[in-house]
Amino acid sequence: MSRLPIRILGIDPGLRRTGWGLIEADGKRLIPIACGSLATSEKAALGERLVAIHDGLVAVIERYRPHEAAVEQTFVNTNAAATLKLGQARGIAMLVPARAGLTVAEYAPNLVKKTIVGAGHGEKAQIRMMIAVLLPKADPQSEDAADALAIAVCHAHHRASAVLKVAMR
Image (cartoon, rainbow, N blue to C red; front, side):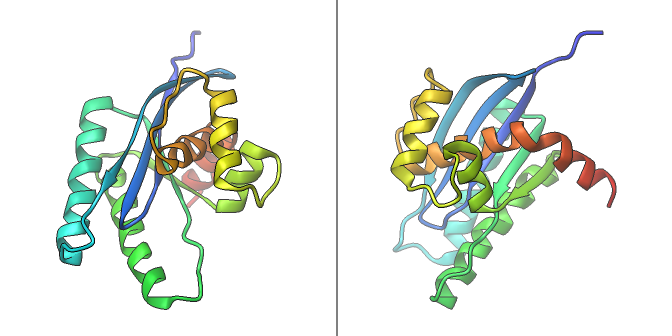
């Protein structure tokens, strides 16, 4: 019985920029497919910005047809308003793949960093450097895209337990 590669969409939600990254996991081999970020204008109304994120993610899913998605969990910071806005962007980031019928896994930022860098408090530059090592053919043009690829790689490493967890709900 041959196993088909699993196409994973990683999403790094943000109101200013939502990063996305696609990889294929073929056994232990990880193959970068595409990555990018969806930018919104800070001058636009919140609703318009959320629609832009929604429409951008819908287009990515329609174009690349992932099998599963993974989204970074929101960390709570001292600015409650910023945390709330990030939560709204994250809601869109979870809704779009779920509406497309994908299983959506969630990962804490520290787990993503630990999986990629080996420590739970890695800097963005370290993540980008390790993504270049793990996925040498990937060319993320932004930190958000690199972070999204890191989330996808994290899911590839932890997906068996994440899919099982969702199935048991």
